[in-house]
Image (cartoon, rainbow, N blue to C red):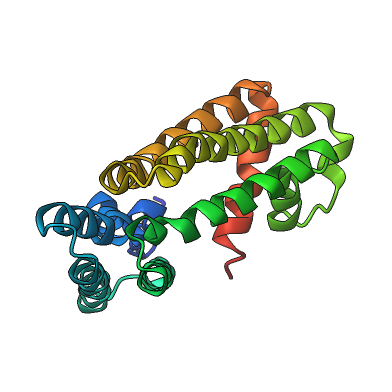
Length: 232
């Protein structure tokens, strides 16, 4: 009589769940602290301190520093915090230098204008920025330009981001020229993370809607594979 085959169980290897990009950034609360807190602080202090520019700048820089410390304590990724803190410092230096409160928003306006010119150039020359990014992260070079469907999709996403910059400038620039400091502060906050989240959602919808399901799966897999990197 044959003996029953021995059943062996393979060891179960526990895998820590991969963190999403949002979790790596500290969740929505962390992103709000990074992007919004210094500007919220500046807007409130400037509005309720009889337009004390120096005090408002000090509070904004302090708020940016608090965000940095918060990140360090939680051992979270701080690359976006460093960029945000430098941005606040440059903005504060500009306003302090000119003595005009609205100039705290000037670096951001100029940066958006620069992005707008960059997006427009890549669209007009038919080398849309997001096509170049896709070719870089998937290591496929300019192959996307030979794929009509993929080219149109990436071009449309670039146009969406160009539109985002145009909307920001259309709102911020008139407020800046009319020295509407409090309105600039509100617009800066509203056109920051909330508006960027809307832009990402629209870009996702446009990208997916511009492709067949099969093409979308291919593009999604290519990007996901490159972002994960090769694992032994």
